[in-house]
Length: 162
Image (cartoon, rainbow, N blue to C red):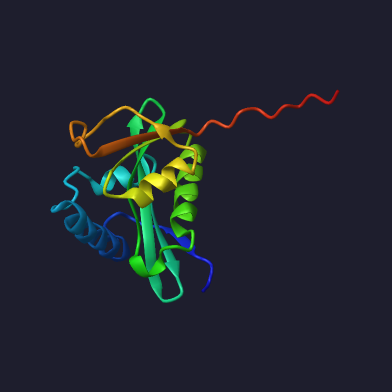
């Protein structure tokens, strides 16, 4: 298995669209319907956002993006790894790249929403330094929704020498 290659693409790029279609199909299996959160491809284009596709060996295997939400915050959306590529740490690689690019773009915090029928996602966010956040967005009133936040600000290193 080769190392994943992450590529910035428009949200309406064929690889992104194929992965998002698989993600939406998985939502239908888990929840009975696709994610209906409004998403505009322009929100995931610089300078207000970014969308990544991970390629490995024969093609696209995962994706994720962020969009600016004001006040130094970005929202992560469409995190997904194909079933046959799971269990190799690829979601963690994508998440770290999203956090790094958001920080490099000057943002201070990540927010996101997932739900109880995605325990793998909840585990990923908890073990990646995310804390429980306040409800927001399209699913704010849904009892199964879970919200997470993470600061992107890196504390100053302790430079004391003595």
